[in-house]
Image (cartoon, rainbow, N blue to C red; front, top):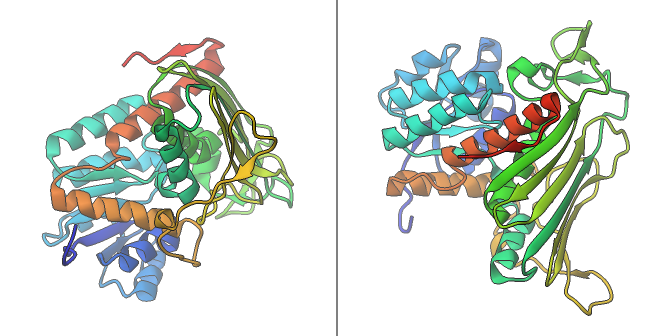
Length: 366
């Protein structure tokens, strides 16, 4: 934005991930967090006390009535995103919405169209676009490092090491809440694929629930999960390349995540070894060109990892996303990843599930 940073007053709806990443990121980037909202008022009060937030709400509609509130961050289960987003836009607030974007592509389209009509700044929280290694991959692809893409192979494998009867949040358990592992983690990788390689034309896939018996966070009884813990899909891009992905949260001692990108002129590999799925904040990228005998380390420029935030490995990329959000508010734009990106990602999520239930390849036609 240049010069003095503009003042933005923001309210946060949801204090789970909201307290871990959103509020710390906003305060670190100079936004004034003036309100927090949670259905459980005790949790809202605890967050307000920790972060010195003046206003507390248990009803988000009341929060949206604040005349001096500029923006809201929606950090709730996906089933609530649609109604909260439309209400916030109707109240004239800029919106930062968590992923997965919506329950389905119809809701997602309406949210994107409402955003477009409002003239407000809206973005979706696909912060891993701003992870150092993923930004480096994007730059190398655009510079021609791999040449013509032909294949992407992505694998994600991990799971609770104490057995799958570990406490888990309801939106990961109940398909009607809008997620499962495909929405929770697969959406990030789908967004990166679109960011790197452009639009998708066809989708085929399957979803599985290998461990349906789980214990919810707020009770001790075992519930029967309806959402998937494992997914697989194949995508074809408009440029002719293909991507295949296997993701599972039902693999204790799985080896983390790995992305392999193969083109006519080069190979890129992003290994994310360890117990998590998130890309390391400071990068990690390997590459090779025809004639090389082995994969070589590609140093990630410091400009793509401009600071260290040791509080959580998601904070650096999220703070970079927040900077784009602030820039958008200043410029009157909606920087990517915006609600159109959320809609396009939701199309693919729906297509994977449609393909799984029908056994057919799904064509993306719009």
